[in-house]
Image (cartoon, rainbow, N blue to C red; front, top):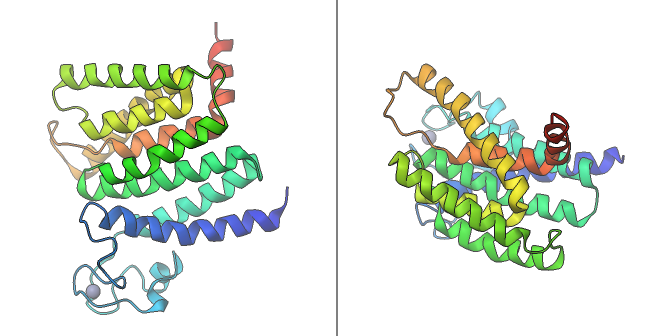
Length: 250
Ligand SMILES: [Zn+2]
C-alpha cells in the first residue's frame, strides 16, 4: 500500500473537510455563494489565510477567534480531521477503483449534512437534491447485483421509516426519511437493513450520552442525521465482514 497516496488523501481530506464545514453551515442559511470570504460568526471579522488552515489554525489559536477571543466550536477541527481520516481510509481500503469514487461521493454528502444537522437540526434538501442524481448515475454504471436491489432498498427504507415517523410522532423527521431512502437506493436491501440497525444503535448510545452531558430532558430533540451518516460509513467500509459475521451466527 502506497503510503504517499494515503498522506495525499489525508491532506486533501483536511482541505475538503474545511470546505464541507462551510457548506454545512451556509447551505441551510442560503449564503453559500453570497459571501466572499470566511468570517468569524461573532465579530464578523474576515479571516486571514493563517486562520483558514484546517485543524492547525484551531490548535495555534487555542480554539479562540484572534479578533474577539470568542471560543470556536471544537466541532469544526474535528470535522476536518474526520474528513482527512475518511479520505485516507477510502484510499487505503479501495485504492483507485470505482468503489473509491462511491466513497468520495458518500463522504461529500455525509460530512456537510452532519455539520448542518448538528448546527441547525436540519438535513438540507439542497444537498440531497444535488447528490441524488450523482448516486443514480453511479449505480447505472456500477449496479448492485441483482440490479433491482437498489429499488427494493429504497422502497423498504421509505416505507419502514415512514411507519416509524407516523407511530413515534416526532422521533424522526422527513429529512431523516429522505436520507435513509437515498441510502436504501445506494446500498440495496440487505446492507440498508444493517445500516438502519446500526443507526438506531449508534443513535441510542449517542443520545443517552448527549442527554447526560448536556442535562437535557427526555423530550428534547436530538439530531439523528449524524448517526445515520456514521452507520452509512460503517456499512460502506466494513459492511461485508459485518454481514458475514452476522450470518455466521445462525
Ligand atoms: Zn471573532
